[in-house]
Image (tube, rainbow, N blue to C red; front, top):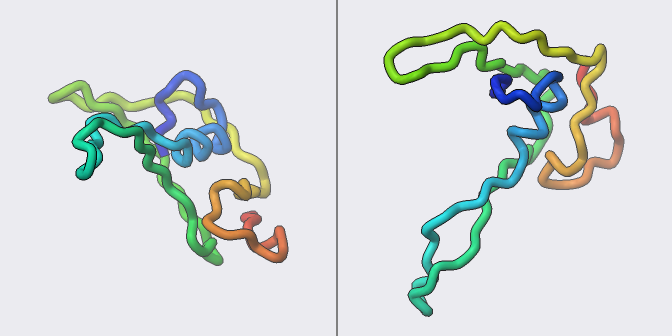
Length: 98
């Protein structure tokens, strides 16, 4: 998860940024030969029993790596937002990690 952006102060912020839809430019309709609108997004198909997250603690400026030293807060129990999931789950504890 990318923690470098200034709006990321918590694990929840980093997850929201990761799951945010991304606008794609240069997508053309084969039939009309015109540029269209397209978005790409990520969703979790099936939540794992154990969730492991990696924080990107280094940024690169071409040839040099720099450590990102900002503090990131995280809750004792992480609740995965429902819009991050590809389908609804019958019980909320199936998307909760301690």
